[in-house]
Length: 379
Image (cartoon, rainbow, N blue to C red):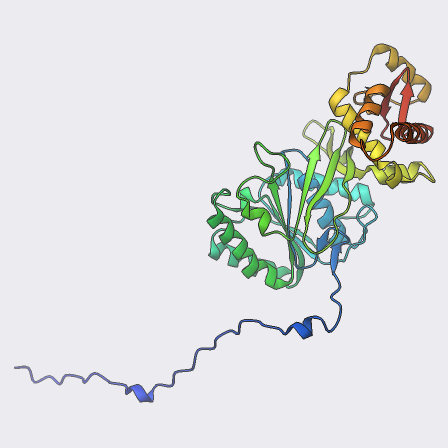
């Protein structure tokens, strides 16, 4: 038997340990009387569109302009400038970009030209997508944002598909995605705008689980036609939705040169209402908007390519032919408007109203009427 001393195992008495009681976070409750003691004002990031602290969805088909709208909103908020006549509140803006990294710089240069200012320092753009379905990744994104701007006002996730490694048709995956936004992004005080694709079979809804739309405070779509892009609010939980707004894509040559020494190009969105307002003093855009929409609808249904005869007539208006898309007969335009407003007024009243608006639009050079046809003019 060994004579070596065995070192006794130290034993710590249980009652000698000081165990701090675990702090339990209180579940937030507030009395109804406190909620009604004073009016709650909506804090807008973009007036009538994006509310501070809200969760929003913007969907559309590929190349519909949805990412252009998101970048435009973020640019204006970060730069403290109005967006197409709507006031903004200046905050830091984060764009979690999942795709199109090479084109974002060109789009920013186009917006610099559009607004006549340098890109705002309060606008930050990721260099890679984030897998927000993974909790550790979501936490990493949130901590990275706090490191550069502790109180961002808007986080744009563009797109849902590229920033979620899961099944967008799964209500469970979407619930986890939204839960991570609620726990890691919104506590910073930020509104969140998720850019997403439209449905495969139904272009008037977003793709994937219906729980996506259900979780949103507001939902918007960008829909592109042959002549323009329409921004529509489909859901507004706590405010009155604005009427659809119509835009055109404005191409621009940048001061940057490509490898062939030619100017790079990009585009930005320009509001039809502002174009009309700038070029046509006294024009009532809201009053004429239904007629313009009727015209665009008629172009979609009955539009035809320009004939050589009508092209020759354009010379008298000094308008380049490349600014014209398709044309529509006055008869088809009128028919489409009558169908849209059927039941609202008598046929005689509709005819008088249509002719009055057509004349005003023509007088203001917003449309051109020639030989029984009409077409839009974008200056």
